[in-house]
Length: 329
Ligand SMILES: [Zn+2]
Image (cartoon, rainbow, N blue to C red; front, side):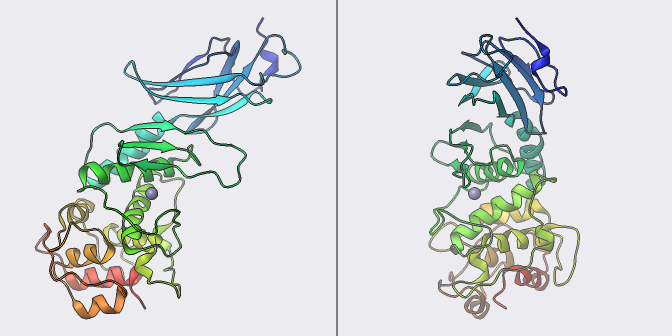
């Protein structure tokens, strides 16, 4: 018994058992424990799935307590599984991350001109009605993205992927302090702001339609920290260092690949680069102690830096650009 009339008019229902191939991705969904289901594209990164049972047919398309499982396949191999309880409405927004991967992850790799091996991801269940859902994150130990809150936003997907690119291709993620939780406009630490600012920049590269406006970001200044300890300021500085637009004190249009190579190769006598001032002095090619004290209070300047960078960069222009978003003035 399959009656199309119970579905909204904009969708094209199909009788179960459910299997849908989403245009532009390599993901398939299969429902278990649900008698019949139908799908419809809801947005670029999700599709709606309607599930119902025959015995409740006619009054309620939902099937309470039924578990819906969506399996994601790539080239015939199961790569991730997503499990949800079907709500009484019978309507679920199912993430279609294969799409986000194709659109968002690819453009991050193209912009950075750095590549990495296939990254895995999984969905971690949480209460969809939670007003502050737990954040998605990249797990460096397992090299996988764990999607929770805002899993259906391409920006989140591109942000987490950038962490994964950093880990495998840009020298490895460093340890951060005061980073959990962290927010784009709040003081965290020099290490957290650098790591998350890079991922925030990658988020905008991967998600043109759903993003922060780093090119028009106004520098956040707070009494409890330096501007360089705020990740949004770092993301805005990366944007201005790289983008073709030179407005105000933005004097640079560096190649993104060269900037990423600075992140990958920067070394100080004590360690691999792990914070904003390390990045800045590697970007400039040498340490300026006076400028360090002015703009990076509370942390010692490295005695020297070692880095791979183009020899024709203009240090004055670079200084002007990063001061615009991260300088303590
Ligand atoms: Zn992050």
